[in-house]
Image (cartoon, rainbow, N blue to C red; front, side):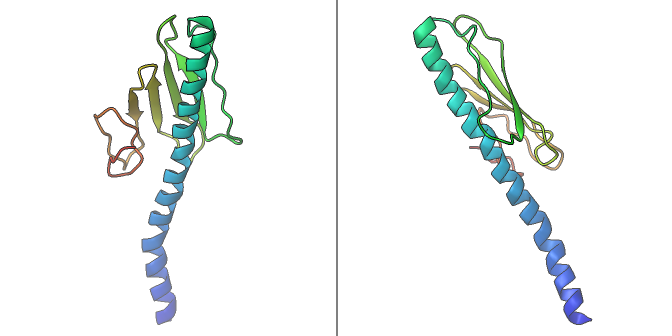
Length: 127
């Protein structure tokens, strides 16, 4: 009986840490995909002298995020990654043509960060 109680206590402590670790691992998909899209759009701009008409599609399959290019003009754009699965719901990240990173929303229990960065930790630490 004591062994079962000890295992239950350890599981109660370890499970939230493990789930947080898994969630942080899934956030990396958005960071990598947005960086790759930024490079692709830079090449598109060099060829066409405009960002209008450039596209960015998710290369990760299955994807935990949906990606969109918003505010595209001839000289600027904003990429947005929005969490699309239950593991990453509530997360929204942005990246501009100037390389400015942003975290526009995080789920409850995660600290937001006002800096120009992508939050990748519940404490509000950034990448």
